[in-house]
Image 1 (cartoon, helix red, strand yellow):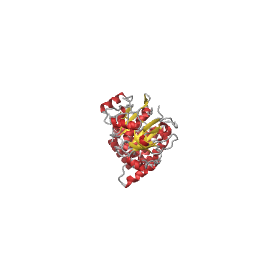
Image 2 (tube, one colour; image 1 turned 180 degrees about the vertical axis):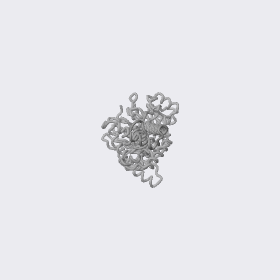
Image 3 (tube, one colour; image 1 turned 90 degrees about the horizontal axis):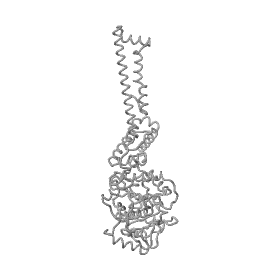
Image 4 (cartoon, rainbow, N blue to C red; image 1 turned 90 degrees about the vertical axis):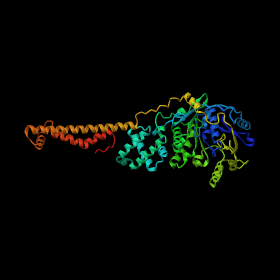
Length: 512
């Protein structure tokens, strides 16, 4: 196994190999550049390199182009001759090859379904997903706490919707314990849940949830490349970014510490990374920064793919040790400022001006800097990126279906599991409470009828008035009389009946 991944040739005549060291690749990285400058191809050749080294990869396919990793390139391809010429220039013996691929899709159309539970997503990410205010996020946190205390599993969206109804019904009592739970906030969250449903969020939440082990497999010594079909998902950019962040957080939470491994356990490419940070609250940015800082010790390398390094907050950008910077276009004063900032993040090379190089590099060329054996960023180099071994561009639907059908994941996630959770449990509570109320009302009516029958019989037998009959039975205290009936009816009408309904609901239900 090679100890590095060959990215391309740099230096004079592009003859000096520019390598990404495997044992430093969990120090994260950046692929940046304007649209059409070659970021996707760089991502593709990196995925090939990691897979060949036995490292599983997760990446999102925003445009559909990366599905070509599953099939071999071909001499019949129109760019075959330019590719071979570039390979000769940088000293690469280009061999066309395919790589093991598993396709995933939140909507289950272009890949195997991939899901998370509402509980796994948690209130912070859900608040980001629904763009909630601080007050609304506070109410959502109360709902999650109540679900935990009441033993109500939150698996899909209808569970959360049912729980919010319950919280609204018990808002007064919950407010005494957790602070104000306003009905207006609950209504706003419910409306945002409806918007999320309309965007396809229903497909994301449920069971069976994604088993992370299914993303970290190898096949014949090669790492499996997990490709998330994201072309449709990109229609809901907040859903896209939140899902990827959830996946990254799950890796952070579940994987054990491994220190500094010889190679990563998984490499995660976060394409269109600016979507993660656009208008993100500080709490979320802090979360990303924490995950990026600590997850490398769990053997996971994270590579952000975006147009401009300025899209990434400084605290996160400072942790990205391996960088490939494709061309940036400069049209405005803001563009010039961003270009200057991007150039300043590299170690200067006396052979050229970094800012000028970032403007001048052509398609398939980039300014690169990778960590050396000591973990120190190398000086920046103009690098000709190697051509891919797999097919450049998307595969057809027939080929995709054949790969999906032959996958080990075929059938595992296809059928949705809908077990008893918060929705079903709260529904049963409500039904039980309604039944208890009906039975209490029926018993009340039965006792009242008995009392009427008793009074009528006494009037018929002795000609006594209803009032004297009641007084007589109170003083005697015997038999199945009106006094006993009156007491039972009064209790059912009063606090005892209310306690009965409260107990069945298991809540702070307020009787009428």
